[in-house]
Amino acid sequence: MEESKPVHPPVTIVDVAREAKVSAATVSNYLNGRSHKLSAATSTRIRAVIERLGYTPSLGAQRMSALGRSGSVGVLMRRSLAESFAEPFFAQVFGGIGRAFDASATRGLVMTRPATAEGASETAYLLSLSRGIVDGFLVFDIEAHDATLKLFAQRHVPFVAFGQLDDSIGPCIGTDHAAGVREATAWLIRQGHRRFAFAKGSSRLLLNQHRQRGMRQAQVAAGLAAEPTWIYDQAEHASPEAWLGALLGEEHGPTAFLIPPSWYAIWLNLVSKRPPTWPAVEPVLMDYLDQAPPNARMPARLEPPTAEIGRRGAEMLDDYIVSGDRPDSVLLPAKFIPPDRP
Image (cartoon, rainbow, N blue to C red):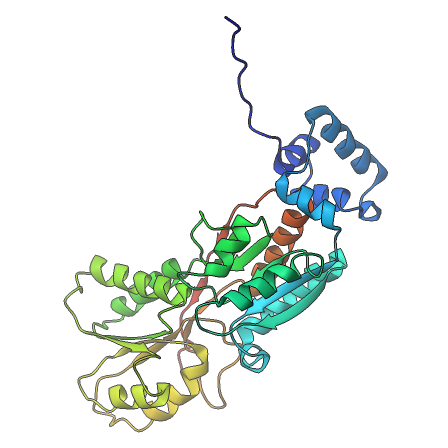
């Protein structure tokens, strides 16, 4: 009986990069015809490794080769451009994406999609764009059950999601929100706080679920599982100002507030109306804040590496498009910064 031969895993762009002693992005540049960015020696070395290892692009790369590259990438988000760029976080992320696009001569086409479950017509439209209009997608505001991303994966449409995504669906890059909020909550507990208010926002967005999980983990670790926690859900509450006003108007309400940066000015105004004899309250902003409002100090905050997230996400997608090899997901830590004390 003929002895069966061992089955070896297919060679990937990462294997080529390792053997050639360069980064995957450098191999991507070579495969994508951007040899002008490489020295002659580097190009020769990469070509020799590809030939020696027998590297061939995977199904995703073959698909893109057959269609031809458009040089454009779709950027999908669920909010308007005005809403997005009003937040410093998005300005920083898009700055990083822009620098990566400039380096690879890629065009970005920004598209918004409704904050509801995807319909068949929208999904069909996005799939049609992937047939020659765009080479792949960068996806923001991902939800727990995102049918579009699952269909992208089934149809071998390259994409990278910003945030935390189930690895079985596709690659993502983002901040480890659970770890960041867990650290912030632990700091608040060390300051003596026991009653928390948490601005969850939309329960559909995965990042908000991860943040709430991080807060809960810190509370449980400190033995505060039974303490009351006030949760803001935009589907249940009228407005952030009304919710904050009701909580800050109570003497024995929460004293620790985990809120987004866009709420900080509202929070300061409401706190100024509290009687000075009431318990002190403390906020932690769960995202990037470029500067405090006039005559206010910088509060405790979490600062994600926003520009790096944008740049690396765009580079991951570019490598995915060129090689067809799905990149590994990346979660970067947020930096916790204590408040500026007077």
